[in-house]
Image: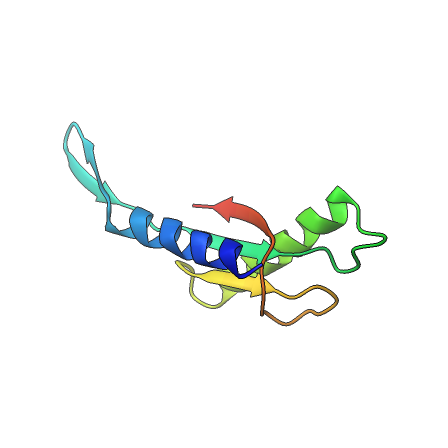
Length: 88
């Protein structure tokens, strides 16, 4: 689970550091990531898994964007990782 969190952070940093060239200059962007595992492995659907990652993503945005928030299974507090939902 921790690997997904580390991967999301590496991707976030790479996006933040990259300047994208446009015809009239350059632009930099940032991304927020919500990472989550199913709340209950025995009954979690894909929709539940995506909903948990989406909730973590909204927490990342609420905390100031350009960050990774992870959510532990069976909890609503950030902690560990498994699924990835990305928004730039």
